[in-house]
Each structure stands twice: as C-alpha cells, then as structure tokens.
Image: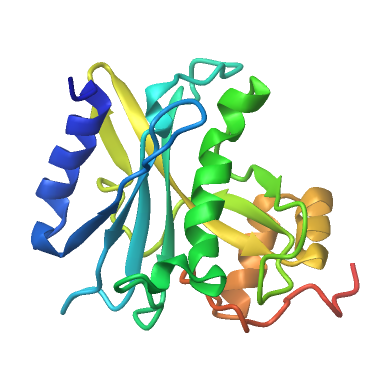
Length: 208
C-alpha cells in the first residue's frame, strides 16, 4: 500500500513541475527505519538548476514545541545544472554527498526525538567531501515559489526547506547573530541558494 504522504507529494510535483517525465527517483532499497526516497528534478528551459527533494521525512510527525511550527517537513537541495547525477555517476562520492546530506538530515528529527525548522543548523560531523563546509542550515528558497514550498497535507502543511551548507565561520556568525543577519550578508555578497562548492566564505575575515 502506497503511504498517503507519498501520493500527496507526487501530486504536488505533478502540479508545479512542468514535465514530470524529467523527474528521476532514487528509490531507497534498504531503509534503517522509514522509507526515504530522493527525487531528482532535472533543469529545464525555465529552471537552470536541479532540485533534489526528499519524499518520506513527513512520514513521522515531529514533536514541535508550539502549534505555530509545522510537524511535517520535506527537504531539498538546489544544484547547478552540470552536477553529474546521470547513469551511475550519482554514486561517486563527489556527486553523492547532497543525497546523503538530505537523508541524514531527513532522519535527524526522528533519530534524536526533536524537530527542525527555519534557521536550524545541523553539523555534518566532518567537512563535506571536496569542500570546507562543516554544517548545513535550513532555509526557505528565494528561487522556489512560496506555494511550491508549502504542501497541503489534510488539515496540516508540509513545509519544504532548502538545505544550504555553511563554513565554520558562517556557522559561528549565525549562532552569535541569528539567521536573518547571516542572510543579509549572503544578500550583500549576492550568494544564492544554488550549491557552489567554491563559493566565498563570507565570514572568514569578518570583524564582528
């Protein structure tokens, strides 16, 4: 039997993604707890980036502290169009880490009996392969439409958050000054939410 949330998210993609034939599913063969698939939404003529999106995190409601926070989330990462996920190249460590990051963070709330929402940061444990990123923050994408980032789930809403990797100095700045201040710095440096493993560390030489 197909879980209810699975169909809801697929219907949501049918509504907002023009050509669903261009969606590839990385089906999780063996799950340690709940089934968690990753969808690869390929670039098209109107979108010059790929979207990797989870389907399964919303299977387990989170224990949020207040009703104003959604108990249900899914996650995505925006990748440049040349990120090689074709054939079996997605299995290469340098290409696979965004998929692993989505799965790790997607399982974080249930494994730690906690919740995640806007501005929350998660340590990657060690630098992401081929980068100096050591954590990731949950944001609302400026590129994805507001409606796309809110998925109706009965009387509830599944919030779609974009995962964005951070350098150590950026994480420290965010912890001291808050998410909005960090985002202001990103705006000043024209840093968008598409992954760039060589992007500038905006807080490396910043005097707080």
